[in-house]
Length: 302
Image (cartoon, rainbow, N blue to C red):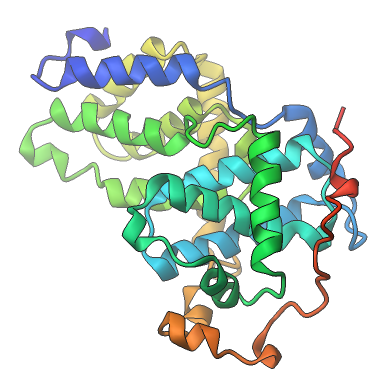
């Protein structure tokens, strides 16, 4: 069993793992809402899986541009999917919803000195809604997400599983377990709405298990210990591991549209951002969000 793994750090890591396992189902997207999004036809008005995935790739571009952490990205995706799975959102409001999720995640995770001004963030993102729109959307998000800015994410499980593995591997074998590579794979999975239906612990362990298959038998044995400890069904793990493998294969293809921070790199400072001309904006049709609220988003998904 995993409790027999012996290093000075392992007991504390396992305590944190048990805490995350206890909490992970409390703040996850509604499966029924995610399925409705996946089944929706693209008519330019309704939320669809394609629009959701496109928005997440935009958020990842912002993460790369600002140099923010994968933890921030994972949290922003959690906020977005929970909100979209609970509320009916018009496509034209998606940019404001996504950027508000991003901003809430940044303020929850990153150091305060690194948090951009709301006005600069909007300009760098090349949207035309206002700071007031963003702040009102933040209030709606916090209300609908029950005011819980700190939740359990796949990144936290990935980090803990990786830490326990490293604590119990020799220095020579640790080189087979690159956390940077695991983070990159997690970010690729977050760009597909399908993976938001997996429990965070399952998604994280699927990514690690896929890598372990290619490396060491010892790693596979430890992954099996994690599976048993985390009470993850073996067939469930195999199912998501296969989907992760397929996703990463497609993501590495030259045909795959990947997040691109290059389109943002010509903006070099907040001063430059404040001087952008309206003609540079890539979304010109989004109306100012009315003070009266988001009537189209007040209808809950059954």
